[in-house]
Amino acid sequence: MSCFDSCVGLIMKVKFFGIVAVACVAAAALAAQPPAPAGDGAEIAALKKELAQLKQSAYRPELGEQMLILQIRHARLWFAGEARNWNLATFQVQELQEALDAVVEYNPDDANFQPERLADVLPAMTRGPIADLRKAVDAKDKAAFEKAFDGLSAACTGCHRAAGNPLLVIQRPKTPLLDNLRVAPEK
Ligand code: HEC
Image: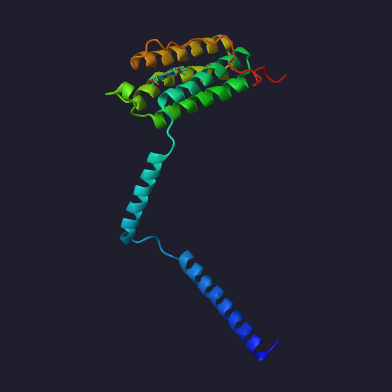
């Protein structure tokens, strides 16, 4: 190795460690940074705007689509309760509640309910029946479960009537749509 080569090598090393040192100092300075001063308001506003645009373009399920999920949840709950699989029924009540919450989250101002808000109508109509279902399932009481289930179906149908769709009548299911999820309780 010539003197020239080793000198270049040395310079490169010094440069490299210099860059590392600068990066370390910069990282330490960033970590120690105080909270954003009020002057960053414009940047925050721009980020908020970008976030709102992202939300706008994000996938939003339509009400009719969400109803198909509710229909499946409603049926699954029935077969779990009929099989006296109370653990599965507890799970299905929770899933049904989450599906109802999702309707409120994504379609709070659905046109069918104007001037009222779906976000008010839906919880008011379903809160009672869901509470009755929870109680019946916790008590492992099949007769109470069936009664509460009919109460829920009536709430579903009641909301359809309120939305001007009285032809959408919800009833007890007779046949499982899918039978690959075992409903028989654990022995
Ligand atoms: C907030 C009121 C409301 C509640 C509560 C409600 N629905 Fe609906 N449902 C609607 C509206 C409005 C439509 C019509 C949707 C449309 O126009 O696409 C509908 C439509 C439906 C449909 C027809 C979907 C189709 O495309 O064939 C089914 C099935 C359904 N709902 C099931 C249920 C079940 C089951 C429940 C209760 C667990 C329920 N819904 C609770 C408002 C409601």
